[in-house]
Length: 112
Image (cartoon, rainbow, N blue to C red; front, side, top):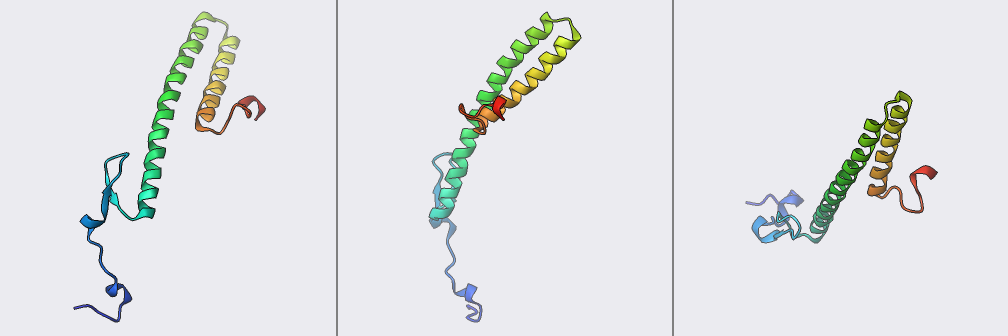
């Protein structure tokens, strides 16, 4: 029996199997409700995009590390080594900010 004194009891219950669709980005079953599907798809796209950016940043950081490590190996003077390490940290931060879109070509790290 349905308790007609409770408005929620009068709502139709959704049958999960009829209201699901497959996300084209991750293959997960998601609600076919358009709002929920759009939010899920947006999050999937952002997740894929961030993974691509992070992998590109990791590659660039590794290349940068190689260059700075070679400079450190070639330099025996402590003051120059300290300068190289601090410059390496600044460059790594700028690379991360640039890749995240916080810094664009017209808005570079040295101007911030």
